[in-house]
Image (cartoon, rainbow, N blue to C red; front, side):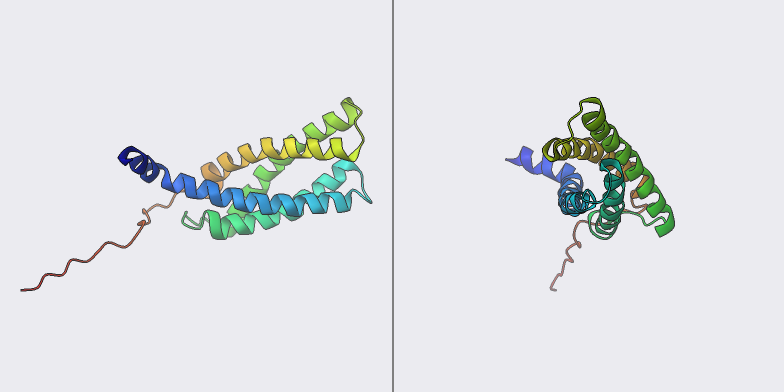
Length: 157
């Protein structure tokens, strides 16, 4: 049991970041999925994907900046927002490749195939985004943030 406790303590920050990142990601996925299918009513498959991604990316930035990675260095809203969108743009390219391949190469134009391709693209993009956010967007704090406040010893004489 002591091994598990030490292992958790060693990876506690990563575990908490992953849980929060996953929660924000799940909520952003719902926003994206709803927007994607709404835009799909009036636009083509790739245009719909771009519009839905812009909306869900904005939602995800706010959630990740102020909840998931709030303990990390704040290196400027403009810098973070630019990099966040840049890396989401790369993740969008991954989704576009998967969706384009499914729609145009495989010739699968039905809504189920479109949504399955979207889920696969989101999964691959999510792996890339988590790594890139930690590496370049939400930087490690320059001074460690204590996990809890130290206890103050009181001695009676």
